[in-house]
Image (cartoon, rainbow, N blue to C red; front, side, top):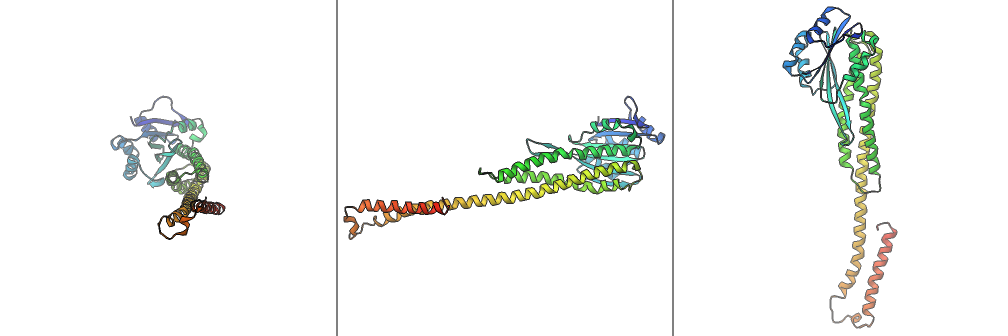
Length: 325
């Protein structure tokens, strides 16, 4: 049930009908014009055992393919290449990136793809590739390019979604509405870091494929891998730009919060000073000393009230002028 698709290609054309595993194995051994692409989804070690024995895959690579949770990489085991890719899908509402993995075994006459997670669908890449028989004649390295190209292309809508959210955060930070965007910034930064872990390690493997360091990769595919390398490099540069933007947004947000708190403290201090004025006056005349000439004045009470009002008004005008209120 873990086998998603099993196909044999003869001279760049897919054989009609369903191909069982044993016939796919026979096709790989028959001649150089035929090769097989076997696609699996989250197989167990027991389910993967037949493929491992048939293609003599390295136990360490098989363990990585079954358990996943690997960083993007390209390793060489004898005459077989082992490639790990991180797939990504952006959920706009939750502002989260869902990651998956595709692990590929490329050998003479075969390509085995192991998919983990939902964000790693390869059906469209297979269909698109099957409409280009001239490229399929290059062998399994053509399928490797189709998969890598699809994975890297799917980074673009993810980065576009993150960019939109970063722009919204920047508008929030400098908005007159009092909000604290620190939590949202940290959340986006976490997703950007995860994207960096998907793009950055992929640069070196793609460069090696583009430079033709592996004989198993058809020379005709080198220029195609150079194109994917350029796209991956641009995606990684975009991710690095996001990291800097979010760091700047976080610093600006902290500065805005600090400025807002200072404004609040100034306002509180100003109103406290205004309220101190009547407290002083009423405190003096509330001491009830016998010899206070003002107590016997007919205008004493109106004068005290007037003094309080004048002091409060004077302080209010002053604090308003200096911007504390």
